[in-house]
Length: 250
Ligand code: SF4
Image (tube, rainbow, N blue to C red; front, side):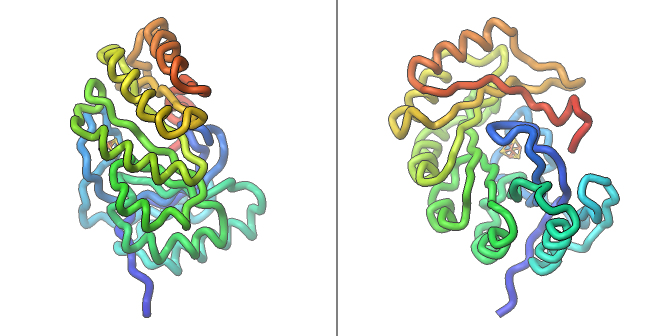
């Protein structure tokens, strides 16, 4: 039976600019579509008829448009070739979006084969817990968001985030929260308590929101206050901004 094909936005090699894997080189496989509409979103989330942009040489930005949907064999042979030509460069494959778990049927077929090449790192908004439960055995590392209302504009996601993290905690997982000047202390307390109730060793990244022009949108002292609040509940709380933008990386 043929493997399902995927609606992809782009496939390329770059450094990870956020979270616990920051600075490591990864292969990014970006899926189309999202189930949220965050206020700070910088990623096109609608599914269009646009082709997928596939980089031919890792990190050289020689993109070639490839018709959607894209076949697994195309991606496997690309990454296999990069592994042979540039051995040891890539740490892992970042499955990102949009929200990649919307493509769970594709992922159930793709992840075992991608994981034969490199470890699989899932970047997710952290709400599709039922789907995560089906895929968790094929994932090595998870970076999940907790969307707080003040910065994301998304509400009512706390229970979904809790259920998601309960499953994700079976793997190497960290949580990321986008914080800004409008963030309120109760949001940091609630998120920290949610994480600590599952495992206080799970790292939390407080990521200052990136404003147009690349400036971080939080007062420096406020960021430190939020870290102090989260540290009352959690062992490892880091403040890390998006770094790929000021490095002019993708
Ligand atoms: S979850 Fe991510 S991709 Fe989806 S709208 Fe929010 S920021 Fe954008």
